[in-house]
Image (cartoon, rainbow over all chains, first blue to last red; front, side, top):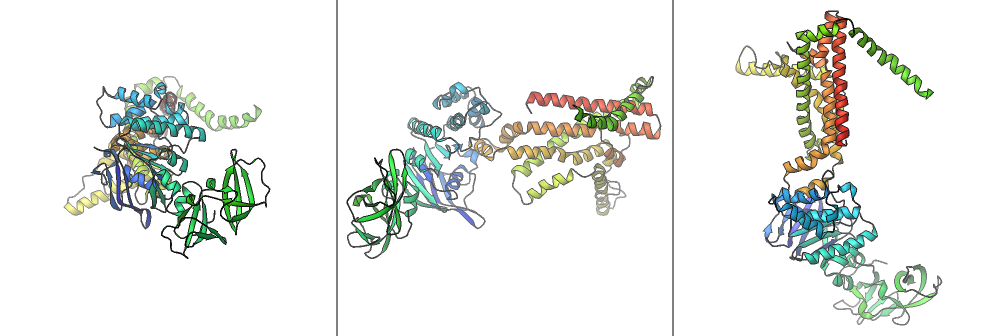
Length: 349
Length: 261
């Protein structure tokens, strides 16, 4: 069997409530695809459709080239790791990891070796005889990953696997997951998260979901630098979304003419200009003057909130020697190529 | 320490003193020897134990299956059924026996239906007045006592555990055996031991079924004390019954502690 996942028009509904709407998405063999979105966006439902825990009302789910839509979960050959670890509390670590191998009736003499291999891979070999309750959260999650990997799945489903960990552990586990994927390049990973940092760090591509629909899909760099929708711009990284009027060679914002690329936009139409706060600086440039209304010190940077024509514009500037006083008038600038014009819609930052 | 005296005094007065009187009465010269030598006592002891053990086993199996269905198989009215279990626990035992008499009694619904359909003079269901009738009534009545702690235990099992087990390739039966059952063992032990002790002491069900030849220890106590006015023998049987119950309880606590329940 080959790896890879394909959603072919998958819709999941509970009565009249559609929780996943006509999802078309392909995860290539060996690819890490992050499903990123807020709560209720349909990302977990999509994962559960692959796992077989929800039955699509319409559409098909493929794992590799096999249509698994009607298969029960135990016949799908996937590994799964969930937020709350879901280790079996009455089994020791090695028995937890061996669970899937025994369920799949792996040859008895192979099981100890494969358990040891999976525990080695996740750095948990020394804890094989412990019970889950004797492990920390991070260690339990490693065991859960080892248990999923022990069956050598072609597809690995990770459902918010780091959400229960503290920030430091999460960062370490992200690096661990990246390493594991380098060691298992053939395994396709579907990674559900609401954390953009996890998605940007780990994924080859990100599928952005909202309101049960796929909003956008692309590489992290594409989505970050060239978002196609306001939702993507605001959910993947932080963004200034400025309501503008399109001109012939730029846009007008708060009475100021800004020279930015306006590919294909009709002159006179309303649009949204997306500029990342860290790409906005202080100094000369487009005529964008405003008054500082709030200052936040963030260690290496200052976040300035500047009111321009009734709209707040965020600017992340390198730490200033002197914190500017509220009410100070400043000029903001950004490179024309750093701005992205989005289809109409108003969303103040 | 003084504050503990009033409740201890009340306990001693209303419970320990009558119990002590029973034990004292049982110590009449030759009472134990006479009772232990009687065939009726030995029969009652065996009947009591096998009925209690069989009813407990039946309750455990039936209770486990029913609790599994209620907890893990979504169906309309599942929550109402779960609530009904709580209400059922408050029913008196004779009520269940009475209901069974209406269904399976000599002139009950089942036999009536049979005679109506076949035209036979009498129906085939006569088991209610045999030990099997007592067993059926006890299983019917006591099964919810196993289900209650089981449902509580099942509600603590993360659905994610079952889903992950399934994704790892485990079929439903394996999930029940290797994931659910081990986590339900303390609840099974608690429910089972409770039912065992209650069955050992059950009086109403045996009396109401009117089962011929089914004499349990509580029935023997009743017979000796009320029908024969042989209080010494009645007290001996009662002491044995109490010792059996307490012994089983101590055994249960020991096993529970070892199992970490």
